[in-house]
Picture 1 (cartoon, one colour):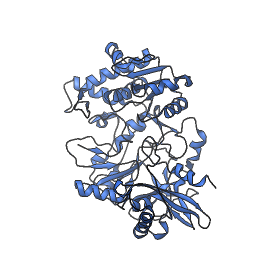
Picture 2 (tube, helix red, strand yellow):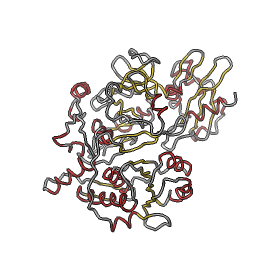
Picture 3 (tube, one colour):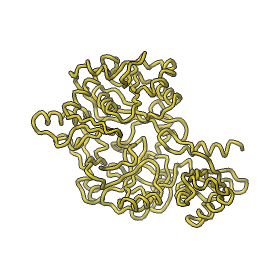
Picture 4 (cartoon, helix red, strand yellow):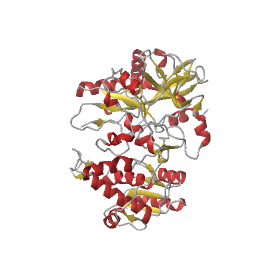
Length: 501
């Protein structure tokens, strides 16, 4: 099988061969067509149609081929859970079920084109059906993790003004507890074997729904989905994505063959070189790291066939012109650290979010000259590889030195006592700021003399990176604060350090 170590940027349904089913109207040149990165970048071309809808233009086209006897070699949908339960649907079955779901959204729930739907389900078959049903109806999907708390759900319902929520019996009580505070919410669908008061039971409704539904005709730049950012700095923001942004944008970077473990990719948080080395030693395979945001699809990646530089996030996707910029928006030369930016003028690239929903001030703040500023710091080396330094607000300024937490955390994780760490700035009367490390210890080291262990870890970092970067302050904690998607909330730790001043 093919493994995705982080699936954040692959949330569309996995449909075999789907992106190559754009047929004669759309010409898509993808990385699979080329043996090396440079030829892929040089020959890349993506023609965007005026109208595009993944359900109509891809899934239904495959259904027609299936009916005509040109049956694909693989099922349209194949799902297996940890208990060995299995679901396989042909394209015709997938089409019929998703049209039934679409009718439920429009007829039973009364949703109209452009209305927003929050989806909180584990990765069960209904998750994918909901995705496709929203495509068919032109409703805007807002997916979220099942790890949300009552407070998280309330914030998303109120911010998005969603009219419908789809979840299961686990999260239904949390929704019920906040529903009275969400004036726009009028439809609640539950995926459950048992009925629940105040909820429409999706499984029962699917038994009686009609599969006679006509897919809406959506323009390629019409809103398709809203993703909430991780909320590592402040409240999560709503990023808008269009039908072409994910429907066509992911075709630039997508693979689907699951025959054996041959290629490993990663995105989300940067991978420490130590982790990469251990993975290679145990599997014989490299991890092809990539870089992107909730606001984007893949921005940079170590594409198949490229030489991997451990710790690097690779080279830009051919869809993006990525540069390192100074504070005035000027492009910096190789080796110079700056802000990671994507050129958006004169033409905004496909795959980049449209704007932060209901937040024009934040949207405007991301523009600097002709570039969208990602909020991340990095540099490009002489070979064109990009290297992540930190979030812009995570930079530590100590005695005139600029220190990114990632390099310090990479050195810390190589010490056998360190299970996890987060590095932030801490006030200092002489240096202004110093590096402080919050460390979660491996179980075998929790009984060791902690003061001695701190000194050992500090000396370890001095030996493995520039000495001025070592953590002058160390605090052992039980766990690190994280977002619901697993990212470390360094801003909370930093606030804790500075709020007493």
